[in-house]
Length: 129
Image (cartoon, rainbow, N blue to C red; front, side):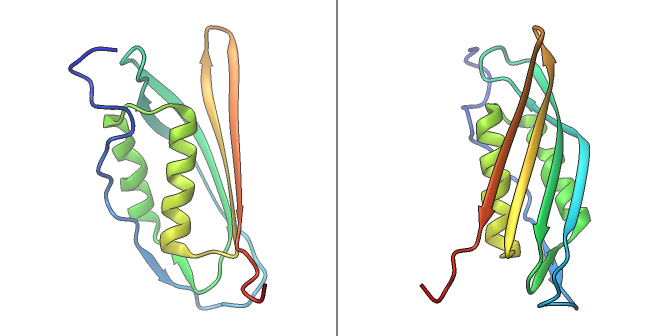
């Protein structure tokens, strides 16, 4: 890895903003997809290209889409492994949206003939336990 690359995982991302869900308690799914996610490979410094699918069960808050777009575009300056990216996105979204559940699928553009997909599922723990 080149010394002039940012350290792996060190990035300041713009804030994710939310809006009030006018239908709390309603069982529905919010899905957002993009193929405009780019990050730098920490090994080579070259850009990696991703497709991302986010699905979640809203509770009291929903994600504001312009802030999500700006947040995702900011990854272009980050040196991160695929595993770092999917976990960072899920943890950041869970923190601000506080959904009932959230799942993410990250597909990496094929490199060297290897297809790579990562999945992460997060479910709110039952508060009565």
